[in-house]
Length: 358
Length: 116
Image 1: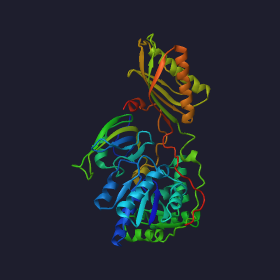
Image 2: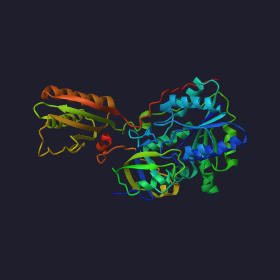
Image 3: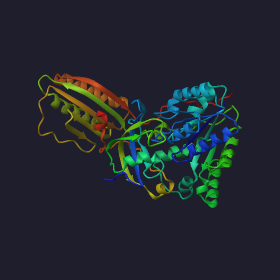
Image 4: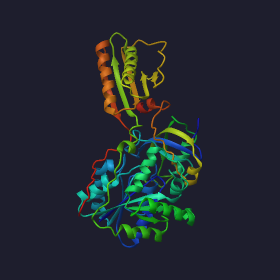
């Protein structure tokens, strides 16, 4: 069985190419399956595969690399129900490092498969970025884009029906100089003959992978240095003397002071108390003390913190502040819900950098 | 404040439920999805329901078996993180390239989200 991993940015033509490839392979009496991983309110892709009776599965809530086990389950499910000859697995546009985190684990744990990695790129975008040198991406996005091209076995330049021959020549010249030794092909994803050109290359692959894993900085990949840790807490604060709201305000101020003492840049620190009173701190601004503080034995508090640090550090600072407050004010805090994380930070299930032999 | 309309780039997060109310996708703790309004980035039926919204707005939008090719009745709880004008290149390409990576700022509406 062959598993073709397809990476490439939003709009790079991955889904169109897979749809055409499935159609072509079915006419050759091959059984196909598709696993999608794209984030976005689409459904149209799944709908296409459903309406054309192409077995398909979805890996949701994160990229293949961070959901390897889910990808594996979906592969097993496709094998169990349809026994496909070929599976196309389309990764989310913002994903890279799939040679180390998906391709090599598949080759290591599944001895009966061949795996390829194709990276798709919109010819017009390549022209804008590398020939016209337009600064379209921010640094982190640019990093992921170039890493996707760097790790590809095959770079598939798509949408050539939308560019001139001259543009194609200049893009080809650039890619061949920049990515020596890589297979680079130019396709129109809606054209059967064009897709056959790609299929002929990926279907000839053997079970051995000498494809190099990326040398990648996960902090840049996950925009780690710039990313804010998110902490969302919901809790109830009890004070028999009726000072619960006041205590919540003291807690907010203590947390703010501790974050500043630790030199942690604050995106914001917000509290919503008893569904009414909103307190908001930013790096440069502390809130005015409310004119009236209602007397209450219980305060329901939602706390949102966005701070440039790791979630563990942020969690500890806030927990310490809560513990300190309970001792100092003789109050009690009952946590209802608590989460701390960095959104979207990639944490692959596996990461293999050695070459895998069949 | 910018509203969702043609040639605007929209950053949003969402939770998607099927007809049984089961959560199929929960993007609320993820980087926002970006799309160019008026392009084929997401279904036009959903885009139509987002028109006029602003950053911070929340709305429940629907995709039903009756008026689409969907195989179930889907409900999306959508939160708009950002709305901005597309640059010329994005309009040519039909999708956003200047993607929001700054996920949350002082203008966000985390409270409402936390209470959901």
